Length: 233
Image 1: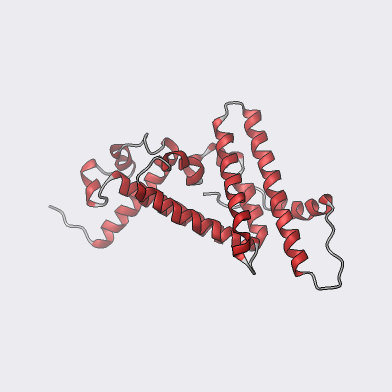
Image 2: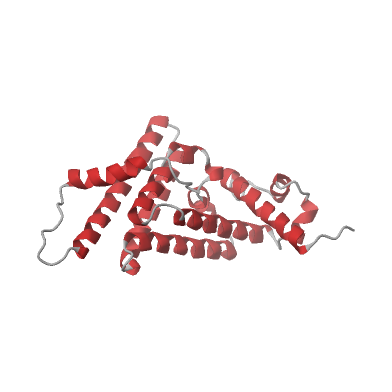
C-alpha cells in the first residue's frame, strides 16, 4: 500500500474542499453525493474516509472555508465604506447571479444549511458572524458594535436580493431585482456615511447637507469607479 506524506494528504484534502465548494454551490448539498464530490477532485469513493468522517464533516469544512475566503476577499477591497460599495456592485451583479459555483455560499446554500447537521450550522454561524463584524468595522471604525445591526441588514439585503434574482425565470425581473438591490444598499451606505461624518463634525460647524442628490452624487462617483470590481465569493 502506498504511503503518502502529511503534506500530500493535506494538499489532497484542500483539493477536495475546493472542488466540493464549487459542486455544492452549483448543485446543492442534497444534490451532491460523495461519489460526485470525490470525482471532481480526481479521486475515488474509497479515499473519502481518509480525509473526512462523514459527508456532514466535509460540508461543514467547505462552509467554513468558503466563508473564510469571503472574509479574506472583503479585506482586500478598498478601506471603509468605499470597499462595501465595491462589494455591493460585485455581489449584486449579473455575473455573480449567473455563476453560483464561483460565488457566495450564503446565497447558494442558506436554505439547505438551515436543514443541515449542527456541525454545519455551527460552521456557518461562526463564519457569518465574522463577516458581519468585518462589515460593521467598515461602517463605524470607531465603534463597530454600534453598527452591528446595520451590518446585518446590509448582509441580509444583498443575500436575499441575489437569491430572488436567481429564483425568478423572468430575465427582466431578475435584472431589476439586482438593480434595485444595488440602489437600496448604496442608499443605506450613504446614510451611514452621512451619520458618521455628522458624528465627527467639530462643534460649531454646519452639519453636512441631507440633500439626497448631493449624497448620491458623492457615493455614485466612488461606486461607479468600482463597479464589477472585486470577487463576490
